[in-house]
Image 1: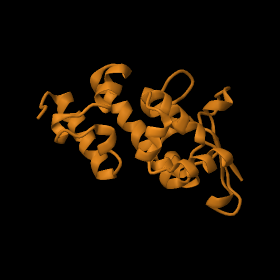
Image 2: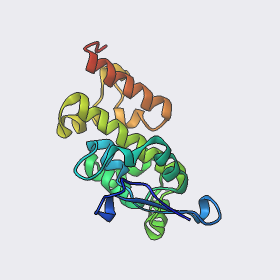
Image 3: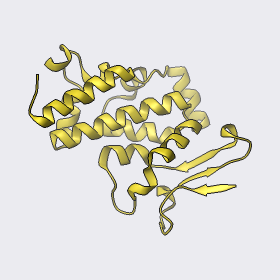
Image 4: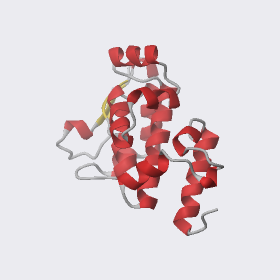
Length: 174
């Protein structure tokens, strides 16, 4: 059984998320995606928001995102891969294995999406990708002098970064 997780009339196969179910999550295969691009840039072009619902994201995370999603995140953040992957809890050896298989595991995928969502929120609040990158990689008073990307290596830290961005958005920066 296959399920196409995209808007029905999309002509671009790269915007589709296809899940083939054979024997549970281990047998599932996801191609395409674009979750990182969606979270950083929002719905663009033929990519409909309906293709990126929470339930579809959860299903994709359970299978594991493509290593290409990690590459898109790295390009968005403009952080060298050797500095980014430790923040995501991925060792050099594991990264090499993931590149060989082409897929991240569910926990790694979740962390990639966490960082993509933070980048997207920072772009929204700070009004440009360059401003967002600068902010995410610089010490912030509101985090006790911590660098947001370093702080976001845990879910609790990521929520603190989101909260700080929310306060900035509301004009309550403290």
